[in-house]
Image: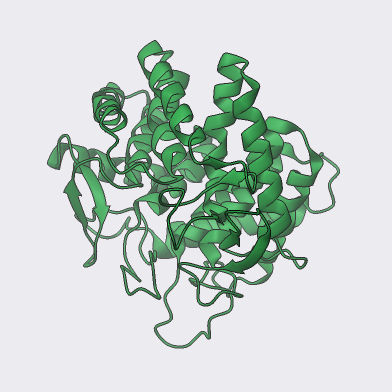
Amino acid sequence: MWQDAIESALATLRGNIRNHPGQFPHITEGQKYEWGGNDDWIEGFYTGMMWLAYEYGGDSFFKTSAEEQLAHYRHRLDHHIVLDHHDIGFLYSLSAVAQWRVTGSEEARQLALEAADKLLLRYRPTYGALQAWGQEDDPQNGGRIIIDCLMNLPLLYWAHEQTGDRKYYDIAVQHVRKSLRFLVRGDGSSYHTFYFDTETGSALRGGTHQGYQDGSTWTRGQAWGVYGFALSYRYTGENIYLDASKRLAKYFIAHLPEDHVAYWDFDVTVEAGTPRDSSASAITACGILELLELLPADDPDRGELSEALHAMMTSLAENYSTRAIPGAVGLLRHGSYHVRGDRAPDDYMIWGDYYYLEALVRLERGIKGYW
């Protein structure tokens, strides 16, 4: 039932590759992408879409296009181009690890291991977690963790599997434990970020960067938690992460509007013109797909999760996709980047495109992402 949506998505992706050779999409406004170099946190999603497209249809055009981009990621790592953040996993899991998984490329494997080493440099032993943004002495972001980083931990888990070196696994586990304790609230909602004292490691307060307010639940952050905790369960087998993923998923589902696609924050007042975030629903769909694979067959919540998954994906495909828009460069409409900061509050989001395609090909053929 998802085949038409996939074929439309692949046609859009093919057009973007042909029209912008050697370039990467950047978020702007006006229902378009700006095309440029590999210098943001989002480029991996574009390369990851190429690998999904190749695995789905076997078209060597997508494989060659993705392989050609590896040199950009090598150049970026070698020259330390805008890598003072936790998003190294987003960049290198969907490019280098993906290429290794699909082709067995030793060049890609080596690059991914070096990227994992780069991510380890963000570990702060004082509070036992990976710092989200900036240098260690950053006055604003020192001591700050972020729920998004759960999706970067698979790069470390993978590096442990490849090398047998416990440092990758141990740091990933320390971070996910810290995230579970301080980012997840008792009702299954989540903080976007949390602050620790950089000298003592003491917990300070929860906060947000892109959410409505510090105590609200930013929907994309909640989505990162759904998928990220499920992935940590896959790698560790610790049931507390499977339970956390399910609790966050159920909270997400319970707070959706009638059309099953989230607004940008669960606590914002909904009125005419309140922005959605279709990307949050696409990420959560992928997280639920992961959950359904990991949960026991007799888990009482399987039915609720499966029903919500299909409702979200049907709405995305029928009401938010660009299938009926000739010449569209994005796959999903009505994504939001940073509503409070008035940065692309209602437009295409390349990560939304990626997770939408990942969910589609997993539903249709069981093809997973590269986490």
